[in-house]
Length: 312
Image (cartoon, rainbow, N blue to C red; front, side):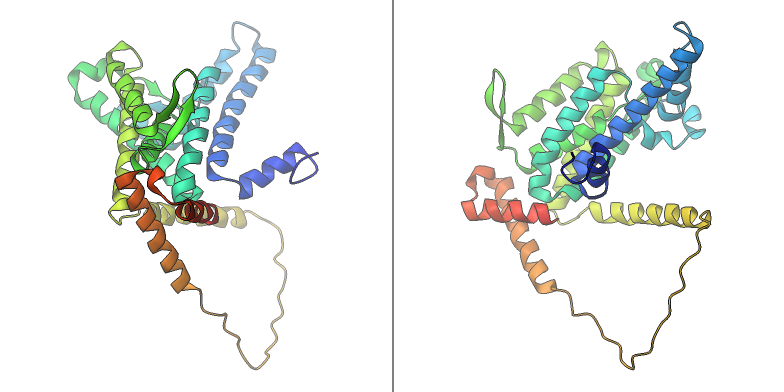
């Protein structure tokens, strides 16, 4: 029996439609992962042990990001699909754990709807940073190939959380309480020193994603909310997709009869004053966190920030 419905499927549909953005991103990554491997299993039954990977490779060819410019021009959608594509179980497990932990921390401060633009800016920024370095620096030209995985987007979420609230502590096994700024620092240093040791493009992409997460929070603190133009583009794409679906739908639209009542009732004005006051209070709290850390907040400020993040 599900919590929100009568089955696990009902629970999944509820989370996809109304759940936390971090959870929805995890579902999207898991969905692509399962799709790739289900096709691989089908290929195993059809082609047998020596040939089953042909089916998986054919699907991955459409999803992964070419790091050479000419192949990328033939499938530009890969700039998006690659950041949801994983093959190895350990790869997706680590990425999703980091996304969940740091996504929950970040959303508690800025609201869960801001996680999506941070993730996408990290994925885009990491990919562009990688493409630039691999194709411009002669010593790195030999490392072109393909890229996949959510790591750049996840690193953006990690750095965004660490930049916004650097002194916020999490408990780690064997280490005890560790502040986010130190976790982020270790992750960045590890990726930097690992560049010549293998997965060169991947480590460069991680650093690009981390940079985007840092810039996102710094711009937000400066009054430039990058999520606003992001959601304008996102809503525009959603409208185009909706119009295409409706164009191919053969369902008859119900006729609506309108009755003239002689007067038009206008809806009450929105509570703009309350929203503006709440936003000013949130900005002041975020400034306080940035300068003095999360622990400097009063109990009332923490409760207000928690309530606001879940209303976002």
